Amino acid sequence: MSLWLWFAAPFIGVLLGLFGAGGGMLTVPLLMYGADFPLKQAIVASLWIVAAVSLTAAIQQRAWQVVRPKLLLFFSAGGLLGGVAGAWLGAWIPALLQQIMFGGLLLAVAIWTIQTRVTAQLEPNTPCHCGLALLAGSALGVLTGLLGVGGGFLMVPVLIALGISHLPTAVAHSLVLIATNATASGLTYLGRGVSLEPKVILIVGGLAAVGSIAGSRLLKRLAVEHLRKGFSAGLALLGGGMLLHAALA
Image 1 (cartoon, rainbow, N blue to C red):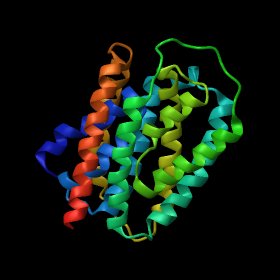
Image 2: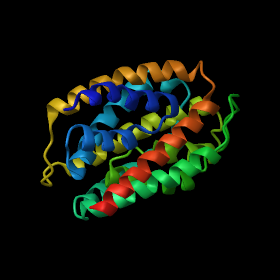
Image 3: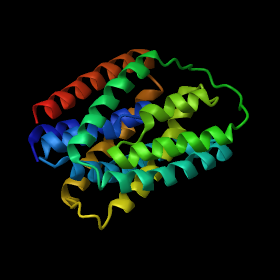
Image 4: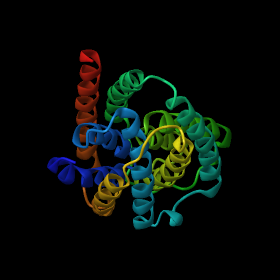
């Protein structure tokens, strides 16, 4: 495990704490290039790391105080089903195809993130669009299982579209959903020939958990608009790098 991975790992948690997103997108490349994990091994390890860190951040933010149970129920039910399906598919498709999909997804989300608008004002509850929540949760669950990402970078904009336009509230929902989706996907990968490195997972997960606490606190203090632009630029660089690596391979 390279030295720079020790310094980079906390940023996994910082991103999750700030945006309810970005943990898996950073974890997979870090494990590939910082711990020399093959892509499939990095995806599986990322699922367990992101699940644990998301739960830590959700507890830090006291997510139970703001979540809407009905919306969360339908979204998480879809996410669990999609996560299992995505993990089953991810165990069989070629790693190079997964890398191309991952890089392309990062670029697409970078564009989406820079265009997403949020509000700092807490708004009253809106009706639960439960059918849409179930479908959206299923689609994002597939991404979680297939690519080892929590899906929060898409989940937060989707939650905003479903009526939760207050960013910290959307982030709290996202963290709970990521934890459940990633756990279901990680369990599905067990016994499918992808080895785990518990020591690396514990080290990276522990450092990221510390970062998630810092990110949760920064969420209440920093101007999210500037952070969102930096996050989008970082995703674009990572996505371009992974696509270039795939092309050279």
